Image (cartoon, rainbow, N blue to C red; front, top):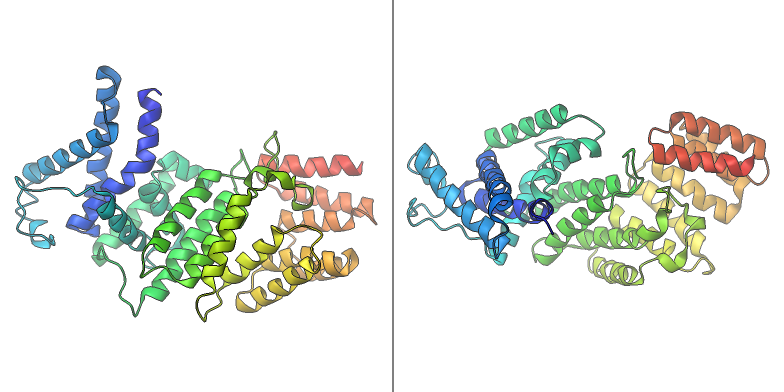
Length: 409
């Protein structure tokens, strides 16, 4: 492995640890200082390793440099004796005796607290996701811009505004207390849920599935499960949902990068181990009295992962969609329910319900109508798919729709 590839991998895995540990040490409102130190560390690695070759232990090398750069920063800017020392939890430290604890235990604790810092309702949801991608997932600005279908300048401004709000609010680097942990968890889970969905139903021009976003959402969610205070039923329910969806990764995309519809997926490509893990977390999520939207969505995903011939499968899914719509109405949820309705009561009944939704600007809506009309009215189905083709924005979605049209011609 060359030094460039290794540095990219280490940036993904170690950047978040360095930033989180530094923020835990001298406050989340100094997040930009922590990022500067981490960025300088990786910049030096790219400059040094390309000339002198890879060190024996690259990770340890990064940690040592990060510690030294932190000491140098304190000395150079006199921050240690001025702005920061009074805010340090361990104020007896000085620039000579300072030790940056990058042990696994402290790193995990710091990252867990950082999740709550970044997923703070103080900032809008898109800013929370952008912060999480940048600091906790080690994504570059270019990658974040692609995920949001925007440009680098917009992302930089969004990140700057979000961090400025956090600085002005003097947000603490700590877990919420017991009285507010539940409500704060809802905000965190909402961010992780949207992050996973952006990967699972990617708006990228290149692929309808971005596994790296999904896997980062799962990794961050697992941090919550590992901590006793945050290991709550809805956290396990979201983890179950992610596992069930992730189990079908390999079956969802063909060799040309096109999405494969559920009915056409090769079941032998489903990951049985992930399905088993999903079952485990779904059982864990039942250890409580609450039923969140994540519980119901995980249950729907569970039924999707069962054998097609299972008696009552689609009846169960339809009833779960009915329940989900009562908890939190969403036009997309209603659209997904229509598909389940077609399996239980037939295409004509489903078309009647779909027409009531009037999601005329949504290409998925017209795709579903196209599928429902395909058997009885191919001409109408083609009209629906042609509308969907006009509305679709990604090249992968357009190719998928074009394939449907070819089959009808």
